[in-house]
Image (cartoon, rainbow, N blue to C red; front, side, top):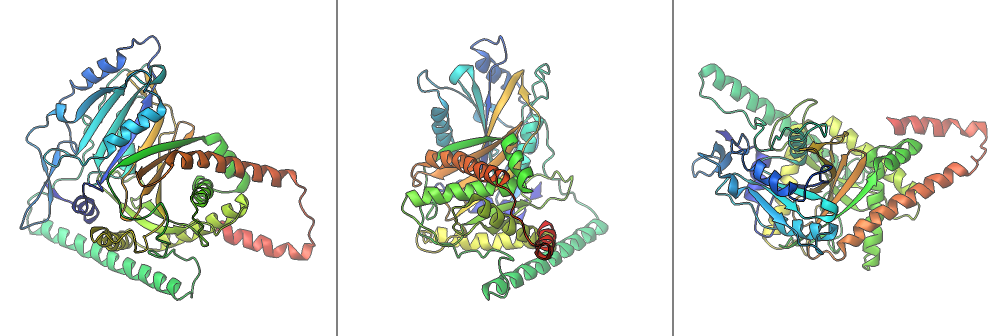
Length: 485
């Protein structure tokens, strides 16, 4: 058995029926060549034969009055309670019908009496497609971990017909706590002391940054939480009822923009999201005079670390002040992200984790008191970027064509946007409550914002470069080097 980390515990104890805390992925497959119409049903039956459930898919959370909640192994796992088959009817089996169906699956909490995960095979989709919807509690894994486990359960080639269900591989999970002697206890105590010391120092450094920013002694060194306007259709009291929409952009287009503007994928994606969100809010009659603020999860794992559970921090990032110029927007977003990167690199991961817990508790307190409709939210929305596999993947010869992420909603946010890159495409998953109007329109605006940025970049490339006196070229060069750092 093992204790839950503070972040894992936070996802567990703050869960409510209106705000369940699970993450999920929607995987859309094409049937293999020459496969029959019953391929999906046969695949489901074959999946059901893999009844040897490995850790952490065999674990429960045990509550205690005398100790923190702990992970324990279930005596047995009834796969029929976790693996489900559905078939959409002809005429109601298109992409939007699939999104609506999955949004309904995403609404309810997972049953805490059994291990906290489900897999749904959805058959009968357009042109012979089928899908897997995989859902797991956020206390068990974050999005990066779920993506890694998903990739491990798929094949690298169509010829490889090995079936490796995500629950039957054995991802290790947390290491078990063992009884030991005085040396082991001393090592554990020293580890806790070092961890708490780094957490205190990191949190103190972040608090100092926030204080300087509040007093306007620094500018955009770190975005402040709880300063965004509370009166937008994207924020407020989280309620039950979910809707899902998605957008996808070829990575070739993203890379072309990235290379031409010397930006990163994050810079380009957030710039286009900023433009899409502003247009969406404007058409709903909401004009925000300052920058939109997003909450952005950051991976706190060291390079090569593959631990289960959650090891993330959530920080606030200001996007661009209002502008009609996509290139100005890109420059402003790049400046904010560089400031955030500098801040993250200067603070121990334990400090960022502590900051995440404190701001999360404050936001959750407002949510529990039902004050999220009146108090300022932590940010206007949450946007995360999960790296996915670069190569094409398969399941029993069926090519995986699309990956759509579905996440949880943080307190006071009615919309969560998650990005996943996979096999030459960048997918945007938009999960929201029923209170957000016209969610599919926002997805359309993401595509429009990419086209607008492409046109702006093409326009600057076509225009002749202005001639400047040589004496004035030194300052921009120094500034460019500073920006690169």
